[in-house]
Image (cartoon, rainbow, N blue to C red; front, side, top):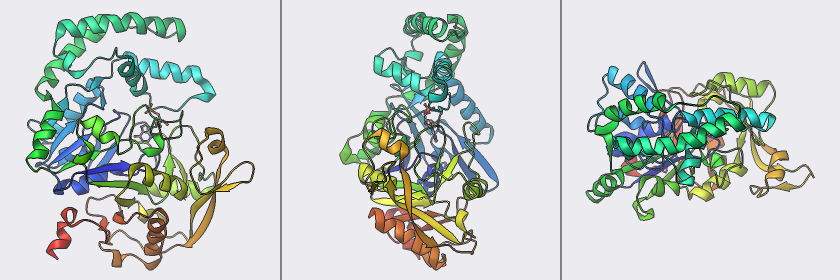
Length: 439
Ligand code: IMP
């Protein structure tokens, strides 16, 4: 069975959670490989709506094992809240959830530093989720981070916490004029968390190796997205990890030869939360209409998302960086009733230069605007479409236009929020669409 990465191709919120949920019946394991509780996945199962931040959405499938890989930064308070909410709704975690011993912890001073830094940046702020993800990765790179395994050794945990607090408190007080922490207010709850989490903490890289060797199929779930990647995204308006598919190996602890399929997820339009360049952004009624119809408000922060047309310059860039084997287009239904749909195929710079490649310089990108091709829309509601031929001809033409431009076949199309509201594309490998095999 192939192993597959599901990666966002835009600025996040493409609906990866739902895509993972749809593919999960065909895999044995789902692994989150980066990010933290800055992510938010909403999955609708029947009438139940689940919002997940750190736990892979595969957890809603009883057969599936879920792993939080070493590349993830974990806020234990938030994770435990999520775990408790799942348990209360009858989801089994024992034997289903595995947390890497090497995953770094988000400590209470990380969100404090995140918010203080954003406040200090003022109009230059990044617009982070304020969850402390950036400062936790800073500590990881500075080699002073505290990891899951440290939670299980009280003496070591206290020692690392003392060293960190001495430094963080000075930064908070003296640079940011913010409140400092005392050790007991962190130590006591974190030792309680340790008791809660201990049964789940393990060497997940070793487990994955064994599972893959025994023929299990693994889905690697990316959080955030390519354009928010710290190396390849719109730096500095990015997250502090690598969402790109290549990072799945590092963040899970597998090798590149363990991955066969890479599916990129794009919304039929584009959204972005937080600050930073967005060449196809709409500031008019159409943008408002997309926000309203698409319910484009942040899962984690509730912030209204910025909205715009599909950006094929960015999508081509994402297809190349991730070596996509399949493209998933979500929320196609949002466009029903639009007379015309625009798609950016090029950018125009401040100096009126036109280009179809993603610009390498930040200053060019900041002033780039989309140049558009216009396609006819459709009036039909897509909610009940289940095969490509159920889709209106103009919707199919829209998809074909995107797929041809990026040279990646479409494997899956989202036509509504429900689990069943998907259309498998013609290019989906048989393993992931057994319904079609049976037909
Ligand atoms: P941070 O990851 O909280 O540091 O935020 C950095 C940037 O990434 C900000 O623009 C956030 O809005 C954005 N971001 C982080 N997580 C997500 C996500 O899950 N979806 C969309 N944007 C995100």
